[in-house]
Amino acid sequence: MGQMRTIGVVTGGGDCPGLNAAIRAIVRSAKLELGWRIIGVTDGFDGLVHPEQCRELTIESVRGILPRGGTILGSTNSRDPFAYPVKENGRTTTKDCSPRCLEAMRQLGIDALIVIGGNGTLTIAHRLSQMGMKVVGVPKTIDNDLQLTDVSLGFDSALHVAMDAIDRLHTTAESHHRVMVVEMMGRDAGWIALDGGVAGGADVILLPEIPFTIENVCAALRRREATGRTSSIIVVAEGVKLPERSASGKPIPKQPGDHVADTLAHAIRECSEKEVRAMVLGHMQRGGSPSPFDRVLATRFGAASVDLVSKEAYGQMVSLQGGKIGSVPLAGAISPVRLVDAESETLRAARAVGISFGDRP
Ligand code: F6P
Image (cartoon, rainbow, N blue to C red; front, side):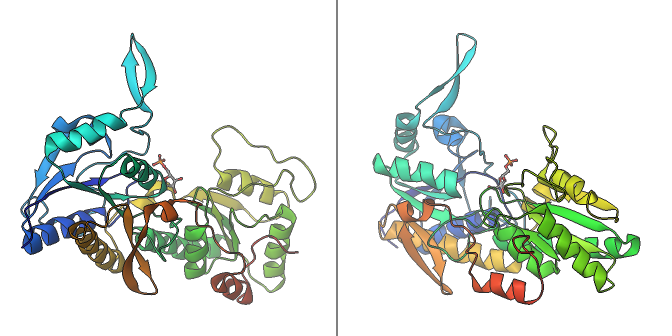
């Protein structure tokens, strides 16, 4: 056992399945292997702005959480300590609370902080590390858009939801001879739509990375009809840039608050005689129990992050590359957002099996 240390663990950004499994792995490996003390920082970096909310994590307090979705620590994706919302004279303004976070670390006796997060959270972690905070990152995001890791925690579980939804939509679409448009999460990158769509046997997949036209989407639907298929599944990532015009050249009407699936369904109705239904998977993709892959990944990432702290390899993030766990600089992981490569092997395979991306007639 090394020198007794206290480490903090924080989960930030949108939650996902596997966070609790990672917290458990950190607590168990830090305690069992090194005898360290672990402080759970609550609700993302809010816990460092309000350190009185933080609490000690023990083997007992993480018992039974491996299969549980969400995070026992809470999370936020709307508050940044560098521009923290504060009320002053009845008005809400923002204040840089980062010095307070460093002070909270001292107050809580935390030597180093393990930050489990996606792009936004790890960007904050990187900035805090530049200010001298001892930080190690763990990549998690269902969007899977962090650099320097083949996969982030939570992505695989989200794919299970996406695939299951498409499987279910196939049967109802077939019964009613309908076109189903299903929207998946992915603000900037289309990883869930691509892999979920391929896994679920979608007919059309629309990604933020590949500009498409409604005309091409409708042509793909007509080709299916010509071969006797009476139903189709279109997967669309929430971050797609919708074309300005429909197949007939009319502007596509968009109501405030409409999801892209609704707008797209509306445009497709114009060129298809089929009934079209839209659905949005939304936060279903972030809920539920982690997949076996994510449970194992969380365990490997969690133990590896403790290992990094023990080696004092701060400013690093654990990562999975070519099946092996390693570490990469935080700065390299957060920017730019990792996008789907339109020439990737998965994409070429998807085209080879007849999936349309709406970019070709
Ligand atoms: O980053 C994860 C994510 O689920 C994105 O895919 C999505 O755009 C966003 O979070 C949704 O955020 P909120 O939980 O604030 O609705």
